[in-house]
Length: 219
Image 1 (cartoon, rainbow, N blue to C red):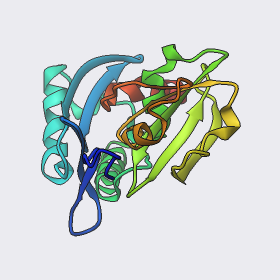
Image 2: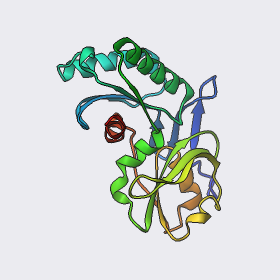
Image 3: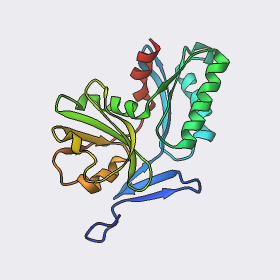
């Protein structure tokens, strides 16, 4: 989009399959990411992350090996595998889920699926209260995003959905402050930059954000 001063405020690049490779707004680049962490009783022991597009096929199993080595653990020490189940990049999700399923089958351990948006929300849970809701967003295409709205208990007030953003998208939450974050939130800034009721927070996806949710499901 071009603002009224003729300055480009948002740009996206897609690959040949129509998948988002990166987005820019000003000097910020919002890229796809991949992360692997190892936790014990809900506490992260080791983590490996890289914020770069389209590296899952070439790096995922290497990251798993590195994280296990860093924590002095082996595959046989694993009790379960948790994976982000989306929404998000189809290719990244397919590779992540397939790898997780393969590990669980080989080790005969459970597979735990965690909503990507809820995992993102867990990272910002401390910002929510009776009057403030948190709204993680994942970029889709053009002005469309995947989003959900959560309260302070991480219960969904608005379930996961795809939304083409406009000035009326959040009219139902007129009595609340909404905190937007994630790469999709960059698109909201164009629409809601002058509205005091909306807040924007920086966010980088991390495998650590799945830890508490996955452990709660496991126990």
